[in-house]
Length: 239
Image 1 (cartoon, rainbow, N blue to C red):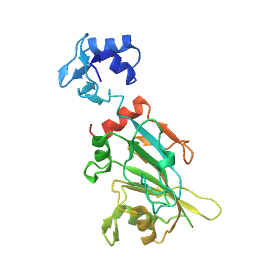
Image 2 (image 1 turned 45 degrees about the vertical axis):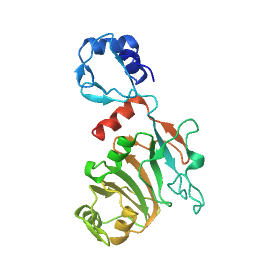
Image 3 (image 1 turned 90 degrees about the horizontal axis):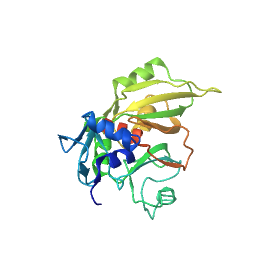
Image 4 (image 1 turned 180 degrees about the vertical axis):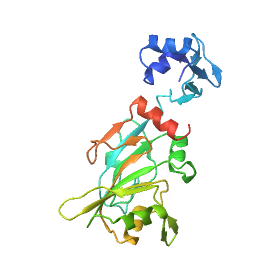
């Protein structure tokens, strides 16, 4: 991609009109590769690092991130000859992206898709402790003791699993709900934890990854992140 004026890159990234972006530059709030930007500066969006108020901004239109509401029964792979249904039919048609982490086949909800390898690494590596929030439907309301065990830690066959947050999420017709926040991503970890404390899962939905929420996105639907959501995600990942 050829160089372009800095204010054009900022406007495309969601910082308002080009005039508003010029004001940001004049106010000294924009940096290019660690140096304070000035009016007239040009950037290569595919190479240069641009920051506004110290936060990195994705000005490269080739880097894109989507939110998918993964339906139950879909395997989190791009192509799998052994899967009844994979992600292929749910992906955007105009860009090649890959799933950030996994949701097991029977779990539904928020799955991020991106072509930014650095972002994907930060979001999935336990070292960066990106919170993932789940809503589980169970057969009965959880007791305070069961919730405390989830927060304290549950011994599983691959080590102790601990919820950052665990609280009751109500319920109806004799059933209950648990809202869990995790910073790990071991295979079927949430299901195994709840089973270990006597709360087998009937339905499990991931509703949040970092600052990004599932919202009203219906199963199978896809949306591209708005610039402000994308910036929040990059900040959460330390990028």
